[in-house]
Length: 169
Image (cartoon, rainbow, N blue to C red):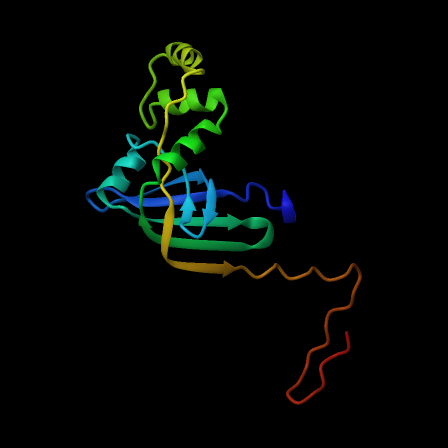
């Protein structure tokens, strides 16, 4: 990936349930423009239910390769029908079928039945929703890179006394 960041679009979506208990899930950023941050989610999933109850959330991006973190928080609003349909139709047939038939956070008793259902649904792409973001606040974090190890066989640095010049590098 650009700049050596693996999965730069991966983000953690944090929400709360009706009791105020927090939850988080990793999703992919689908888009970013003047209207906000877009991600896709199923309205009947646990995350969709939490967002319907409390339409505010936080996104966190973490890029370990650069010791960087970005946080965004704000209101979540549903995307337009046109944008949602375009997002859904841009997916592969398998991804569309899995999105329609996946029973997120529910136990599967029979994987074969779900696989057959997905195979049958591959050619039926109905429209979907993809909520955009309008952040109410953002924050960035930058970690300190670890100190460089001393060069092999280098003498230890000389102790300095107050007012003494720093040793030459």
